[in-house]
Image (cartoon, rainbow, N blue to C red):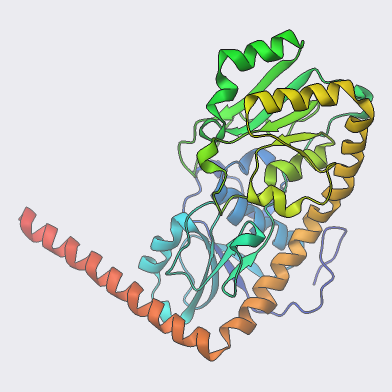
Length: 351
């Protein structure tokens, strides 16, 4: 196995190849996946499919793990697919019985036809669902220490639909204006997984002083969400103000990890606290930089290796798994037969 500073020294790796299923590759723009590096080519990794499938493949490949990137399901073995592509894997597979399908659930609902799932927070984990933290933002440009403890620019990074409408209101804008604070809104309107969002500047935190991520209240209890915004804030050296959500609370060890807020008024109060207390600001920055070590790429690579080459094979060898897998295969075959029958009926009707 090859080694360098990014390669994982775990000697338990075996020669069994794990496949990563990426059927649509328009956003690659012709780039060779084997020549990508996340920190250099960070703009490619802007959607769930490209983060969970392509970036994981690339980082494991760099670490020397036996992986391959495929656009059709392999004839046998373990294949990792995004939840949005699970039906395609099942419909395209030559022999569903010879595959172990691991779905990267992302923020989708549970996928009952998958054999196993990788989930984004510990609350979603169980015997067949394995928690692996989301990758932190590749190519991240941190806030320079020279900015000190000033609070001049407050930012949100993410999808516009994930932002509480209160933070798009005139009262929010007025609250920031009276404090002399600018609102740096870096949002996209999602238009598909296989798309390069060229307007993204989600890697550049160099002019940001505080991260705000307040989701709509209806999303606070959503189970599948990751803590990626908190991980990124820690790595960038920036205090975070976040809504009261399970993934963030799972990681919380002290009041220095982040400030929790449930409304526009509470966010503004948190900004005031950071402006008034430079010691609080600097303590949160130092604490965050320490916490960010837990999510360094080599740590997440090691977790993927443990799940794909030890935990899932061990679980797949148990009698209870084999029984459940057989039931899932029957359901998958039934669904495939139904789809084929519907297609044939539609063709007959057309004639």
